[in-house]
Image 1 (tube, rainbow, N blue to C red):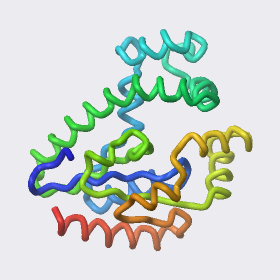
Image 2 (cartoon, helix red, strand yellow):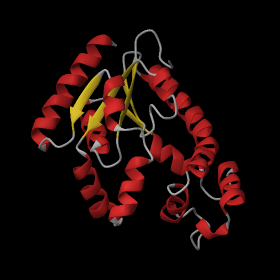
Image 3 (cartoon, rainbow, N blue to C red):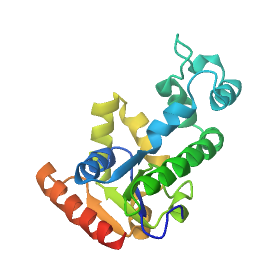
Image 4 (cartoon, rainbow, N blue to C red):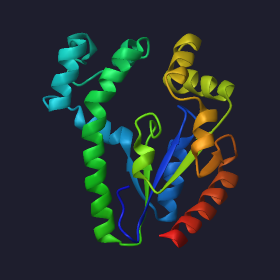
Length: 206
């Protein structure tokens, strides 16, 4: 795990469209330091960076926008149809994201030795990140809700949404490995109350 003797590093995950990002924002409002794996992944693949070159060399110029940035929808339509290609993409991105997460976690510990650091990581278990955190939180919803949210939020077809869900570890397996589970279908006030209670419990541990 990457934490000091005092601070606590907590992995936050869930399935796609379960409400994980909403929970992350709630933790931030409570005073937690939130590190967003998706944002770090965006940063490591900006044009001309090593990961960008590796992705273009692997998947071709067809996955680029006109400004040479990576078109995530185009890339997703390729990798979510082929597990080998998805694993290859993860092997390019994950080590670079991990190094940046470690740097930011150490920075948070220096600034506040008793910080509660939330690492918002969609692939917490799939990428083995759970081995590097002190506690793990899973945000869960039923699959029908996941599919409906993906179709509305991302403009995906039913089959595209199902492929996206199936590309991740089943939620039942994630919840079985979690220290804490939050219901992503709760109304915002109820969910915020639970997050606040959990934040206070984590801060007491730190």
